[in-house]
Length: 118
Image 1: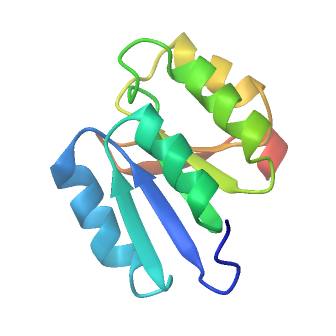
Image 2: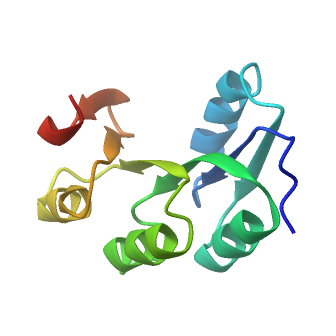
């Protein structure tokens, strides 16, 4: 059951310090900021709430980040998604190749846009 009248952002990362900082920034814009630390919680929470934005760490699943992104997008195609990663490697390109995703290298906090989203 979705709570349609609440603008919610979902932060999914195993690194509490990083998402705590993002939470502080986002709670000024969204009515609810929910933090989760694993894929199961990400999917369960997204199915219960009306999530406007999901900020998801590519390494959330410890190995199948790209699959996790595809599973999330298949179930919640209307939810905007920002994928963060400390990695600057081919997995980031693969993650971006599935659609118009924003991505952030969390190590440098430098925001990048894929050519398709400019």
